[in-house]
Every structure is written in structure tokens, then in C-alpha cells.
Length: 359
Image (cartoon, rainbow, N blue to C red):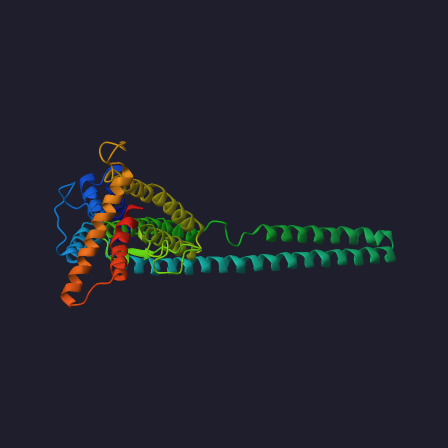
């Protein structure tokens, strides 16, 4: 119990650090701006983030690993993401069994109460029948004998009424038991760890978005788009940032609801709504503002020769130029002439990831 309370306090501290890092611009704005600039293809030029294109993939992997180590102390204070997730699975299973046992006991008690009620009704029916028989005997034997017999039978009936009433007032299982208190306490600790795990999972999604690879993007399926590989939207990509965060929230919520404990399920739903509404939304807003500011000619959208559209075109051309140079170099090394279709394909592949990040 002491170890559990200590772990919960550590998890609360780690969760607060993650929120402070990403909510309200607490995270280093300069670092975030350089990361997004690198993703969009502005490395080094405007921000001094260093850069050429050499060793791109290896450099991204190295930076991602370094960024994942700076996890606000989650791995040191709480544990590995996979281990914590597996522990919460076992925890949820224990709570599910506890809740099932409590419901089984209450169902058994309700059946006992129904049986006692049926027995009471049978006793009352038997008493009524005996009373009718006694009255019939009294009418047969005359008024004097019936008077004394009525008095004794009334005493028996009154004593049986008292016994039936006392039996009806006995409470087998109270509405709130010690097991409910323990389950509520365990559910509170479970919700705290589930919240910390959700924040850590979303933090990992943010790191992947800042240091993307091919797994960071997925194709956009547009209804009614052309089946041609060069049709409108055929090469469009989207990032998996939001999907990864929603997956973490969905997994957390489903696991909490699977416990069957209403308090734990409500707490998990509230945590997911709060984290998605504050942390994820704040990160998306800041990334959109930084991405748009990188395409501005100055301190705002100024009219003239360098509007936002012109900057976007220049950005796309630079990305396309990098793709073309890569294709020409590969063709020269392999000894065959690069065709127009391959050039167009590689150009789209070069522009699509950066456009997906900006979108």
C-alpha cells in the first residue's frame, strides 16, 4: 500500500511536468520552432537550426531517441511505457473480477430477499386460512366457547405478526460495504496512473511528429478522387499525430470501462476529455501558428511581392528541387535515364510529407 501511494504521487508529479511542458507554451518555444522548421524544410535558413541535408534519416533517428529519453522522468519515476500498460491491464482485470464478485453477491442477496418475501406471503396466507378455520369452528360451538378460543387465537396471531415484521426488517447486505470502499480507493489510484500513461503516450506522439519518418504519415483517401496515380489528391499524406493521441485515449477509456466500476470509468472519461481538450488542442494550435509564421514574409501577412501564397510556392519548389536532385543523382549512379513519370512521382513524394506537416 505504501509503495502504491508512492507510485501514484510520482505519477502525478510526472503528469504535471508533461502538462507544464506542452500547455500554455511552457515547452521551450525556440526548440519547438526549430523542430517544426526542420520538418517543414526550413532547417537552418531562417532559424539558424543548423543544417544541410546530409545524413537526414540517421540524424532524425538519433534526435528522436535523444528526445524520447527526455520524458519528464516517466521511465525513471513510473516505469517503461509497455510495462506500465501491461500492469494497468492486470489491474483492470483485478477490478473487473472484484466488481463481478460484488455484483454476484448482491444478486444472490436479492434472490434471498425475494425468497424471504415469498415465505412471508405464504405465512400470511396460512395465518389467514387458520383464522378463517377458527372462525368457522367458533360459529359451530357457540358463542361462549368461541369467546375464549378467539382470545387465545388472537394472541397467537399477534405474536406471529411481530415475528414476521422483525424478520422483514433484517438487512442482509448494506448498500455500501467495506469492499466498495476498497474498490473506490483502488480505482482512484488506477485513474491517476492511467492519466499519467495517457500523457506519456501523447508526449511520445509529439516527439514522433517533431522527428518524422515514413511511419509518421498515412495516405489521405479522398472520396471521388481519380484512380490515377497522378490524380488530384492521389499522393496526399496526413500525419498520424492526432490518430496516435486518440488511440491512446481510446485504449485508456476502453480499459477503464472494462473494469465495470462506474467511478473508475467516469474518472477515465473525464481525464481523456480534459487532456484532449487542453493539451492536444494547445499543441495543435501552437504547431499551426509556428508553421504559418514560417511562411509569412514579415510580421504578418503583408501585401506585395512576398505574400503567403508566394512563400508557399517557393517552399514547394525548394522541396521539389531536393526531390529532383535526388532522382537525378540516383539515375546517374545507376546508369539509366530518369523518365518524366519517375521525376513527377519523386517530386510528389518529396512535397507530400512537408505539406502534410504544414496542413
